[in-house]
Image (cartoon, rainbow, N blue to C red; front, side, top):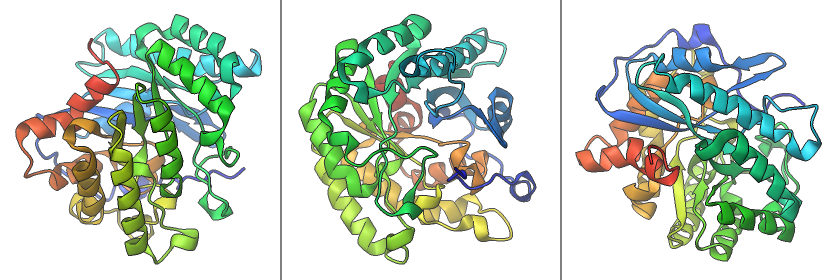
Length: 340
């Protein structure tokens, strides 16, 4: 299947660079990937090159992307290979050779929760390989009937979040004290709410602002989508166990078109486009339940890493120092038990 992600164009991105705003602010990138796929490569050195934009990155959270799978193992256990890979990157970074940054300080693996109780030995093997760095699990769950709204090379079946087998798998996360990351579209947030209510003691992290859609049947209806998404967000925020990642608006499904311009967007342009979404999410969940993410390299097709962090900083420029610290690093430390 053709990649659902925008192509990365280094020459296009190189047309614009910005000095970092608030360069001393500690940042934990709450969501990134590393992968090697046919025609696609984004490995440690690529990520470090993006980080070299002047912002103070002190840590990162690796999130599953079905890469580095151990293909010689039984299918259910192949995702253990990805955890082993990320843990190796983390061990290298922990040597101090990269300075203060700790890459993959927390790992969100890809154990298939739809296995139900059969996921237990997979989780146990992941924990054996990664130890306390394994902090959560994410499955492919973003679904829509419209084929234009595919954001994953291997789409999930409909209704996966409500599947009883999936819920049995989720129960094993709770037993191990692991977090459940969920990538779902705004049209699925009521399903996320069902999961959150079914597992009130489980920390659930909603990725990419809860997926407000902007293409396909939602193209040209941004205000209506924003209103629907905002209501769903407030319902979800009533569950105290839910956290919200702020980012992911560089994906095609979000409907922004900065990639079509002759030059890449600057941070002022991005901040203007993103401000309503970021502030609505923060207003709904509070700074203590929100955390900034890059979603790189997925979002790299639309803007560069340093410009993205400047845009986030512009949106919250008037927040207190303590609140900024929570958004850029504190909430991530708490949610994923980094440094504990």
